[in-house]
Length: 400
Image 1: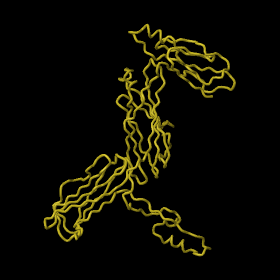
Image 2: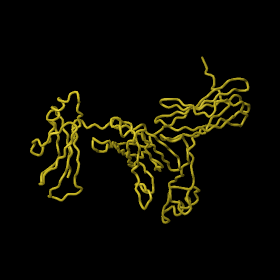
Image 3: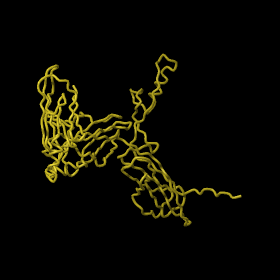
Image 4: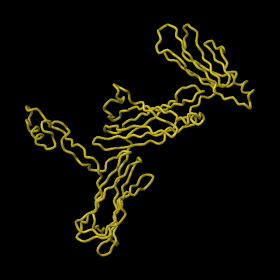
């Protein structure tokens, strides 16, 4: 019968502790009225408890701090810091000690050791200390692999390693929307408005230190998140830039093409890469986090063959009184010089119909027309624009 040999004990001990900010100690106060059976017993115990605040014993928060008891969770964009200590628990000198720390993610393996050189010897009751840092850039499961190799006095080479698993969570939910500024097609303004919605999906409040947009090389950016009051620039979010759990904050930016690119209409209209957001925040005890989005992409503006836009409409109207609205219709089709005659035949059929459905105008390629409704009361809910040659329609809805 085979007998498994006993597991050999190592001469060195490995200890790993994550370095994080301490948390405030909390306790659950237990009290009662003096007329109850315990009398003043519970109140006296709370007064004698060193973790409570004198004069405010019933508060859950105390004056003491507690260190983390486990690796816990870390959020994307934060810096992971850990303390690694190798202690010689034996009574003999150990030689050629090499400590290696690797971080295994779902896509790569990173070496976090500050030095890959081996320590010549380690005497009894002595230790080797190291602190590692890493900015977390991936979400999901991470495994810290700590490996130790050494040589005993007898020349035997020993090796062991330990694994520490922790989760990297997503701290913010970022949603973006792009709005192309309405302008005359004959001019090149091409302003783009970006609305960024940032939601705190953690369980603790955040201090939003900075939220900025780094534009691409073709654009200049202007932040629209502050107003001028008494000659001072004040943010629209108030003096306190705290974002509570599950709260959402909206940021607005205006991007304008640079002068050297604004003159090239074809290049600007085809640009889809706008830039990226840079977000910096701090948590309860000043732990800093930073998150940069990937390059934000927008859909290149395309209006098809026909474009219908609203030129003028009053801000307020009186009930049951006529008012004027002005719409602009643009034939966006670019005429082909090689097929000039065919283009004129095809696109001269662009027609605009009033409420009775009759044709009131025709537009040549690249031309624009304005329609002004005559005075009077008409039930208008939407404006439909169609071409008589191609089955394409453009709608403009009006809401009272």
